[in-house]
Length: 353
Image (cartoon, rainbow, N blue to C red; front, side, top):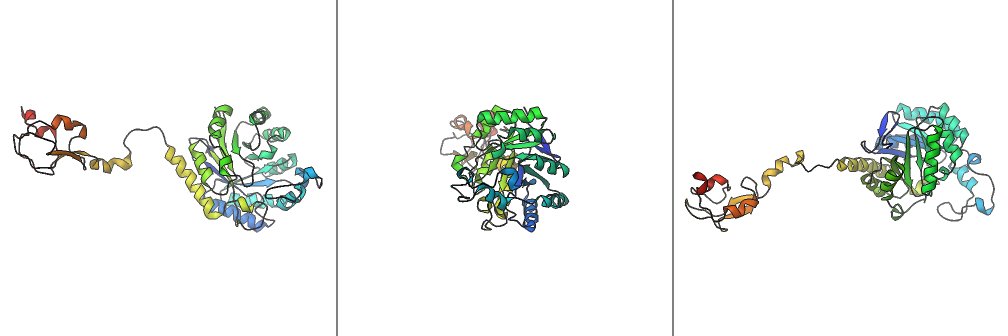
């Protein structure tokens, strides 16, 4: 099984805390200062990486307004694809200063390329990894081109069926990608939690035998945190400085405190999974003495027969375990006992022989 990948020295897999990616996408809103602030936010909230998107409108679509190039519904309804991506794209000259800035903060930065020229740019910047967006998961030539870099690759699988996912994996492997991860994704913006069917993560891990994670487009962090319990080793989430900022992706992205909650919650969820362990835990040791045990609840004289009026199962736990109650009832005590004393085997007359 491909149970582990490594990005920039960070091991990623089920035996390690979830790898959290802050997706900047279009939330720079055309201002490089916003991009710097989002990198700061990602670092301060506890993300492992920040991710960009690298394209020009002309490398992702064409400037045509015929019906098939128009967005008819959803968040971006009424715009052409070209108009949307013209608003959303990040100028390529920003990449180097942003890469340099992230590196100065010791947070990993990489990007989603949308064509071969974007890959070439990112290679010049020595990107440590690549992310293939869901819409490009069927672009097998692009996946092959990325694979030839030999860098770790993450592929989102929104809208893809089993055969398409398998084809993307095969092309990546054949092209030279050794470290590959796949993300369960619903390509709705936003996507309702009920559409995520997180149990798919379990099947994906078994079926495709790859490091598996979640690209989450819901409007909160609950789905992402829940995914950890089902084996998500990577979580990608859009982040923004202001959900009401007016940018193409702001409205379904997390603001700082929400993203911090995701980073913290995902890591706590992973820690809570632990291992199969029926042993007594260190945090329980001080409370063992408060478990139920057998105590005298009524004074009793030497030689008297113990009845249910004399002994009960109560807290604390310094007496015999309650399972011995039936052995105690009907026995004679060897000496006097006061109410509040624990019952132990050597109180019995029979034990004195």
